[in-house]
Image (cartoon, rainbow, N blue to C red; front, side, top):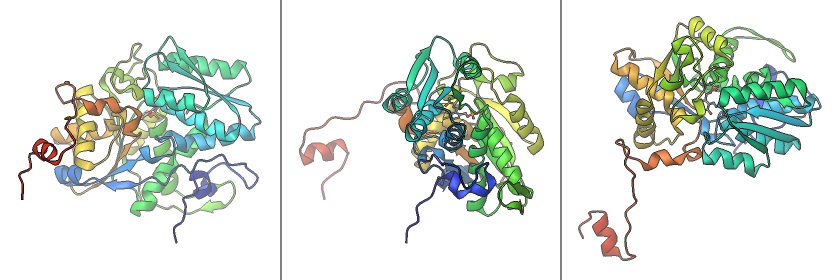
Length: 368
Ligand code: F0G
C-alpha cells in the first residue's frame, strides 16, 4: 500500500522544536528524490546523486524551512509575516501563510525576480512590494519592519527556518544509509549550507531531543561541504560584501549573506571550500542537467553542478566517492534559459502542417 509522506515536521518531529500541541502548517514538503546522476558519475568516477529540491510543493527547498517558520509564527500568535526574497522564499512564505490563514508581505528587488516566482506570490495573495534596491536592501528593511511593527520575520535569520531545512541532510543520510563523502550546493544568503551542516552534525552525534531525550547517532561521519557562489555575487570568496551583486542566477544575487559566518564554519569544520562559478559555467551546468541527467532546474540551482564540473576540469574531484549535489529549485520557475543555445541565440521550435509526411520530413525519417 502506498504511504503518503507527511511533511518534514511530522517525519522528523523528534529532532525539531515542536511539541504534541503544536499546530503544524504543512503542504507535504520534503521527501524529495535523491536521483543518481549517470553522466556526472561517469565523468568523475564517483557516485554522484542529485537532491532534487524542485519537487517540493512550491518548487524549491525553501518549503522545508517555511513549514517550520510559519508553524512558529502561528504558535507565537502572529497575524502577519514578512520576508525579503529573490523569489523562492516569497513564493513559499505566501503559500504557507495562506494555509495558516495569516497575512504575508514580501519585499523583492524590483525587476530582478523571475516571472514564475512573482506569479506564485501574487497567486497566493501576498502583499508584494517591489523595492528599488537589491536583496540585501530588502532584507535590511524586512528586519527593521519586524523589529518595529507587528510582523514576524520568516527569512533564514529566523532559526526556525534552519531547523526545517536541516531535514534535507537527514533525508540524504536516511536514503544512502550514511552521510556522503562530499556535499555540494549553491550559496546565496547562506542559510542552506548552514542548515545542511547542522543536520549532518546532528545525525553524526548523539542528539538531545526536547521530546524524546537522547537519540543515538545515525551516521558514522559528516561530508566535506563545497559551496558555490555566482562569480558576480561572491562576497564570501572575495572576503568582503559586494555592494552591487550581479549574475544571471537571480536567486543567488546576494552581496552580503546573513549567514556568512555560519557558512564559513561549515566550510572550515568540514574541511571544505566555498568557491565561485561564472554565469557561463552556471548555464553550462544548467544545460548539462537538462540534457544529460533529465533534471530541469533554475539557473541558480545549477551552481553546485557547475562547481563540480569546474573542479573536475581542474583535477580536484576524487574518484570512488559518494557525492550529493543539491539542486535547489525547479526549472519551470525561470524557464527562459532553456530557450537559448550556448552561444546565446534563441531556439525556435520547428513548425509543421498536420500531415504525416511533413512531420516525418521534419524529423528526418525515411519510410519503412
Ligand atoms: N538556490 C535557489 C533556487 C535559491 O532560491 C536560493 C536562495 C539559493 C539557492 C541559495 O540558498 O540563500 O540558503 O544560500 N534564495 C533566497 C530567496 C535568497 O529569497 O528565495 P541560501
